[in-house]
Length: 194
Image (cartoon, rainbow, N blue to C red; front, side, top):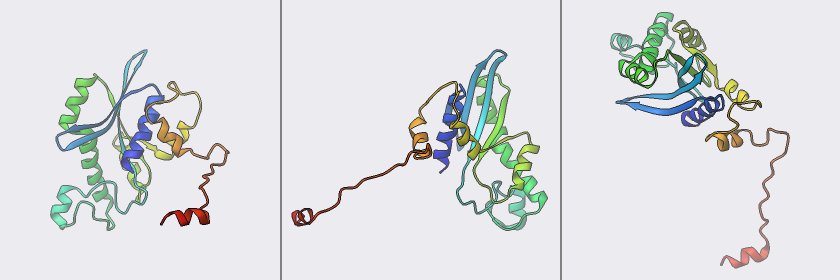
């Protein structure tokens, strides 16, 4: 699901005139999408992470390393967390995704920035995590809003590499019916088999 969501988000960025790099690997870390677009004032630079789950079963933020050590719980432990536990997990998650020194070094080498810190989310089990992201300067987009925006006319780029996938997403939503007609097997056909 995450790769498909990343493709939709990349199409969204491309149609807005951004040049993108997807899936940048830095050791064991990855950056989902980097996007750059020239403007009158210089370059607009965006670092976008995509988190898409159809059926989330735990928190977006893993338990902090200190919390794991102190309690013996695993990083994805789904049990109820205190506000302080969520906050510490958010600090570590945001740092890992957007503040890791190797990532910052790469961003600085690509463009002087500043680079936005953004996340596109599909569903969360605990919506209070959105506030924690915003408090840490992360811009939050709903995947459903991205898809709705892709359906609107007037994009700078009419279609990019994710256009075919987007056509599948919108299949039948333009008011036309989509009908698949399969041949009907006759008695003669079944006799020919064998």
